[in-house]
Image (cartoon, rainbow over all chains, first blue to last red; front, side, top):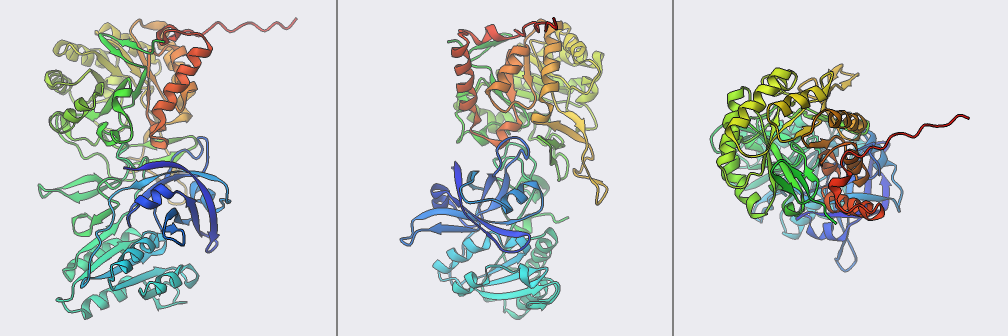
Length: 270
Length: 309
């Protein structure tokens, strides 16, 4: 069951001119959150901006003794609300409702986990990598961005023994191009007997391409979709995704309830 | 202190109703909100058959509001009765079903089915959705259409019939009058205002349906004025709505003439708003020594003339 808290901003770390990591004090949400779940956040009071915004739980913060104290959000400055979050100061209070939605399905060894992230689509993977590490699952992160200075948190993933495969559109770090190219190569190299689970989050085109690659190599794949959400609770029907139903037809499904993590082979990609 | 209000034969325990289209089928909120504590729960609009609605994007935020064109996605009346109504009944919700139709016969048929189901308290007729091509607003934008839909539904049900009116007409009160003449027990107003948001970089609309309905605090003063105007012309109760975000806003609608109010967009922002609204209303009644909330309905005072000496 989701919890609504007035969460104090405990830290705000800028990562670039557009990206930041916002830390919120929210012990109850931190304790309940599973990788892939999201929170609905509004930093401003008043009615402009009006709505909360959905954010994946990026990291779960804990005391040295392991007690959950809060969560962080990976934010990219795009509109009014994300600009407010980019320039938030410690001590400000955010309305924070969560955890919401369906989390990733966690695999066990001998399964390997391949995470595919594009840009701000890195958001659900810090928490996921931690959970996979705790289960001793061998993990790889395929991570693409526009430029090298927009690849974040690499040391964090290295500290969890995550194998990093990096791409940038300008070639400044890693392979030049999109993250799908090395993913395709690895899928082709890997024998069908080795079990691999693919998790993806990022731009719609990247998700569709990942879903197609996974299907081609018969690998299970879960995608975390991002849709414009009004409420995060199933009230407004804004965030729908066309999903294959039991009747063999596609239906609009609310991604806040059925997702944000969805089975890639059930989604009709645009 | 008496918070109850009367809508036709239906007594609501308080004047706060969750607005249709903003509260799913109610069951989505059942773990967060005590549904039985609300005056009523107006569930999402239902046709006879399931509908997929419009492709996304379906909403875009606007200054102090939002534009939406969901397209009345819904599970249809039969699945609602089978899958949602039992839980709503178990949660002791006062269920108001928003009924849609592409024809007058469909409005009557959906209403008949709901009248035979156990646990429906009232029928709200959606003759005002701005976002679908056929049905709905075509009835709500014509006085004869409004009269005909209400009359047809009146014939098939003993439940309170509450047409929900559109503000996208020259004079909403004449539509309230047409509804009253056709036998409506109350009217609810207003639905959303037709509006548009463009992305100037791409020169495309921000939502797939191109135009949509504007809701939220941005529309509140216009909605209050429309409730006030309707109060002058009709005798049946008015359920007022449009951007209510706190107890003050709810009281404003009540004073303007609304017997009950619906809260929609604010529920997106704060799903735990309901006890806060009720506490605020109770606090106001204490401060103003109002014993019955019904006594506050339609009590706008004459504006005192300013002496310029």
